[in-house]
Image (tube, protein in one colour):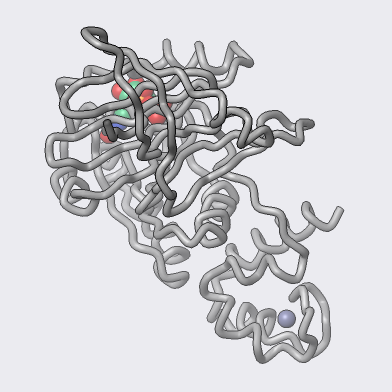
Length: 302
Ligand code: GDP
Ligand code: ZN
């Protein structure tokens, strides 16, 4: 049978097929094929599996070709990687202008990874009910991200405002939901599908902060065939290794200026004849994006 992986812990995975979820082990050949990763089968994978008769268990024998994978280092020191998700159509970053305030530095790190993986992004500002009387906080973010060329949406998962717009935007896609703990990811998933009754609020946050165990991504199926991959407690969205001069290519709106820099390997820091810095000084690139760029550049060069 063919199915889709909704949860994967490494040796085991849950596979959804024809209305049921099967707890599956992996055939030995699959585990051997991918020693570099802690989980040869990841959430979002389309797999072939052999179900056991009369039980909801089975064995995965093959992973179908992937459109993309988002990988992370298994631990900071490890050479092994962990596949966070596969076959993602859209990465949705849930940010909150207040309570808690999401920094533009966090948003920009998320965006460069999505650019590097070539996955489209939607930025969703949640908790509209809390900031609607003070729109200047969200206008500040919109200034930055609209100039950069990103789509944004404001919602309140609590009151339901604009949740239908969000549903339409993601309809039929496989989306990865990311954001700091407490921004309302679980509340938003519940708003889309109340049957799921996911735990929300401080209890789950405390639990996530208090333990060092890996938290796994999980996929939720919506009635309209939209697939939502939730990544609880995952701060870092993928890893990408690149040289300092490559970084600017993942800042979408910088790209048009890069060919006009005097040096081909310009890092846009203090080189003479830098078209990116000129654009930032002229206000064509938002100063916050440029300063976040310099911060990340500094991190990867040191
Ligand atoms: P998660 O950690 O991203 O899954 O966040 P939760 O869904 O658990 O939400 C964290 C807290 O924010 C909970 O207390 C929610 O009730 C609250 N919350 C979520 N969405 C909204 C919203 O749109 N408005 C308000 N006022 N609170 C919200
Ligand atoms: Zn330059």
